[in-house]
Length: 308
Image (cartoon, rainbow, N blue to C red; front, side, top):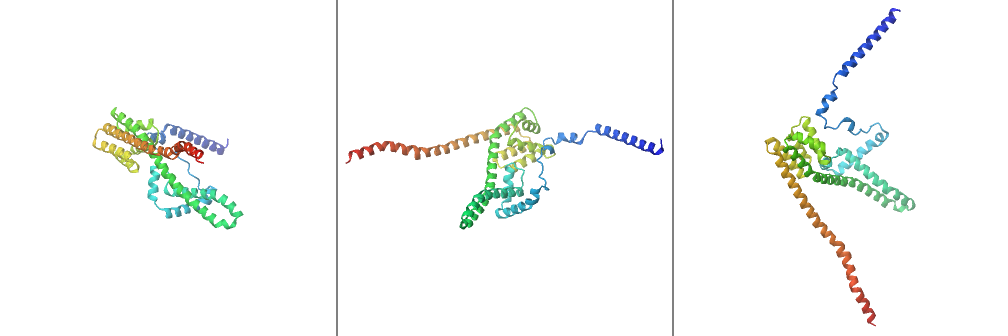
């Protein structure tokens, strides 16, 4: 065997041994994900996050800058970015104001396309109607833009209605867990793991902030700041004050739950009163005229037969 071949075989053997030793040491070392995961288990994991849209795609490369520019124009015309940002938070959406303006532009273009197709067919047969049809298409674009904003308001209302429905149950569970001797953080963890819904998602954010170092009073203060409901704001402020001052937390939660249930009953009674007035509309405008016609029609026919 030549010295060169021996040197190459020795180098290969040494490299293989070094790789084996490195692999064994890495296998014995605890991965950083395992060490950190217990402290951030409430945060969204990378595999559960939505995949970002690739900027190299053809659609984004061609229409992305144009849509962004159109969104900026809509922002300058409509304004109210602070109100939009607030409603996006209250709706629980991860979209920012710029992306929302782009969505408005897309909705406007869809409405424009829906109206433009039949308008183009009509304009092909009647060229003199082109200008009114073009104005009609522009109005459709504006309505599409405004419809997206109206949809955002409807999303906020729907989410807040769900939160109000979930609040008494979640507050009662928290009160029971605290009364059983658990700490506020442990009670919050128990409730978040055993419930589902919009309010549970908000409490999961609070729990994640607490477990990553945010004081519990500050986390609940942030919940009260981003919530659009007075009930949830009072709930968060009550828990923050109870934790800071050491007041009985279970009594606070039971009292707030009773207030919410009473407010729900009052809202149900008011809704029933409004529906009662609406139920009179078909009675007055449909049933009553029919009854009057059935009552007076035979007499009218009799008078026609008697009178020559």
